[in-house]
Length: 144
Image 1 (cartoon, rainbow, N blue to C red):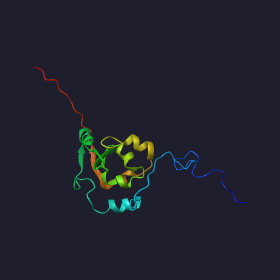
Image 2 (image 1 turned 30 degrees about the horizontal axis):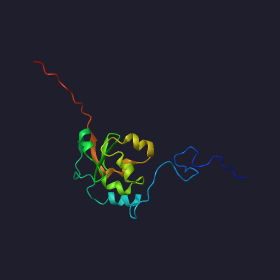
Image 3 (image 1 turned 90 degrees about the vertical axis):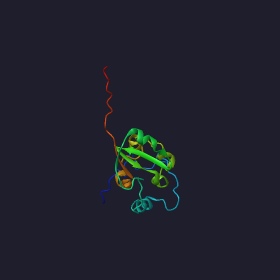
Image 4 (image 1 turned 45 degrees about the vertical axis):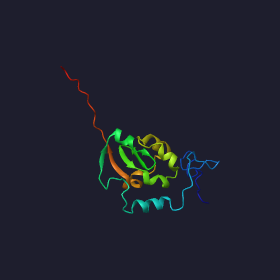
């Protein structure tokens, strides 16, 4: 007799499990033909400048990040690293609307709520703009 485990895979509480209604709690959009994950990987490796900075990494201030909040110029920060996700818009499984929620801001919390397990560092490596500035602004009182 085979010893078949009674536990199912994925586990009932797993984020990988599809709920009975077929909805996983995440909104997925139908991607245009040619915009699958594999298509993104090929595009990202094509040598195109996806940062807009010609390979230069910069230190990004909060003020600078906030300027890049439009679909055609969209930067977001995940765990202290800033990415230009403009080129990724049409490849994002959650659609443009979801990605725009993190436009020009730190999207770490939003990202973690939806797909903490995704290897964004590898997927967005070619979109890396640089690191968020950690410099503190110190105000000095001038004594007269």
